[in-house]
Length: 90
Image (cartoon, rainbow, N blue to C red; front, side, top):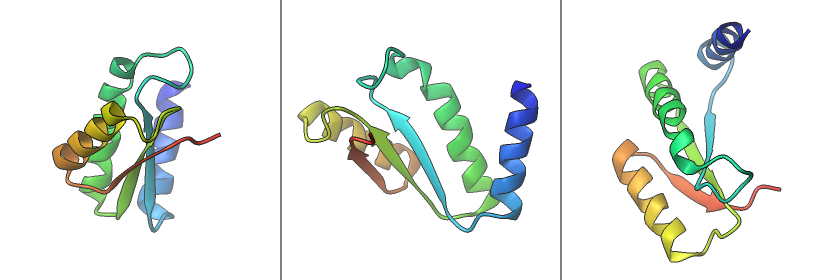
């Protein structure tokens, strides 16, 4: 099931979308720690870069203006060379 969902999502991104939005977190949303998102986050960013579609990243956080969040935002923006926005998505 998981593999089928990834294939379907990849097909939609490659064939039907014009822009992408990657949503990740700093770990303040829910009970899953930040480190558990990193592998999937890297994979999705690399796939979007391979396809060549423009995209941004949103860090979903309960503290969008906290210095630690800003540091993470800057780090991700530099690491992936993409625009990154921190916000609380409710």
